[in-house]
Length: 174
Image 1 (spheres, rainbow, N blue to C red):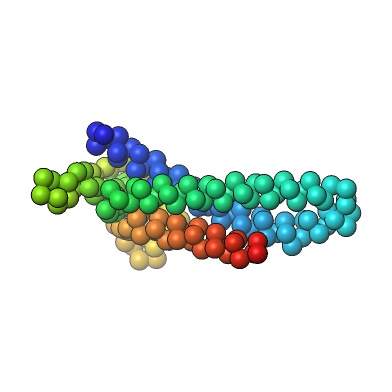
Image 2: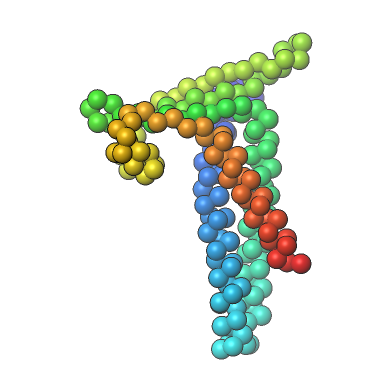
């Protein structure tokens, strides 16, 4: 597979995992509210629809659990090749922002079996609205013009949180 395609796939999966993690986190709150408030209310005021409401939400919950599994599997597969990914937000002298992403991939194995690494660096300007609020806050507080973080570390934590949510769900369903 050509390397630019791998980079594109990695970026797409990274964005999808981030977006899905937000949706999944919100979904757990929705399911919690549904179980504690909405379904009892339906049983009390609309008992003839309570079973339909329960099945609808639990069916959607099954879809979210399947999505969690797929996210975890995709991330695990990507992590076999994606070794490290750093993201650096910088404020330039003209008060513009840029984001530089540096990714290290295992491109292939050499004949002796050792991994061959490829480094990919991209830099692009970003609008101030695209800079994460916590980075802007750090910049305003400390006047740091460059802030770097390990994107893989953040994504690994998000995937771990998804795993913990699944384990909690399994405990709730017993």
